[in-house]
Length: 176
Image 1 (cartoon, rainbow, N blue to C red):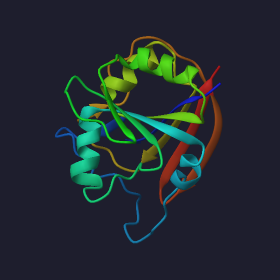
Image 2 (cartoon, helix red, strand yellow):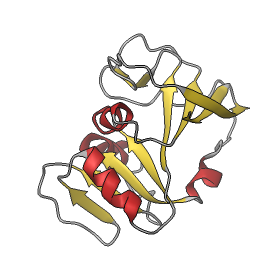
Image 3 (cartoon, rainbow, N blue to C red):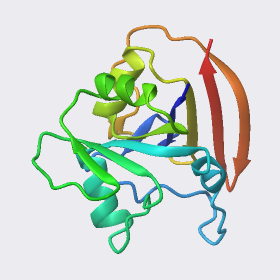
Image 4 (spheres, one colour):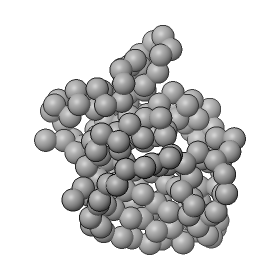
């Protein structure tokens, strides 16, 4: 069965975006170092990426305005907007947990949860994420959009792996 993997970066103090929704701080400690980290290896194991509208717009307008970086994947964008789909981008109005349950039953490789917090938090609450791949960026923002929000329930995980590159610590956890 397909795994649901949260692959995301956060600041040392737990934010996935600054207070204005920006992610220009997503880099390691040495701006000159060109290290892609684990992305290339990770993306080979997935064929589906799920994100919310704000993440989609940010990728389209800021992070990769010229080309869709997930061309090789089927992208699901959760939104209530009536957008026209393309061959590999599907706009759906389903709740995140319903969409993930449906996708998990379909054949294919693993499923990547890309962002944002309104997509991620319900999946965490319902314990639907099989693997957490969190890259901790050496930056303290102090304010912004929290990855875990106001989490009040205990969820125990097992540390599977750690990697470090350019001051970034990637932590890989699975459910216990």
